[in-house]
Image 1 (cartoon, helix red, strand yellow):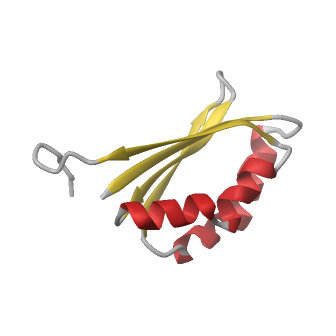
Image 2 (cartoon, rainbow, N blue to C red; image 1 turned 45 degrees about the vertical axis):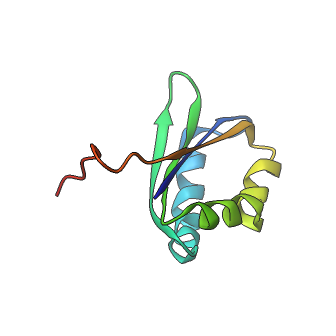
Length: 98
């Protein structure tokens, strides 16, 4: 399992407009191979948004990073300072609640 954390700042778009965009495009993420879950993040005071992605394996994550959807996020002018950090999961002590 791999975790990816993507962050960006909004420019030229309000939080309400951003939420409306999410409502339109969030279903795209359900069809991405190897993506187990995605959590949307918001820090309105810091103007920082993004997502936490849980991937089946590293290859699925790498495919996403090289793919059209992530490239579109990086190239979209309303998202600035886009960062992506990828992490291995330490299985032993990891806890998943019900």
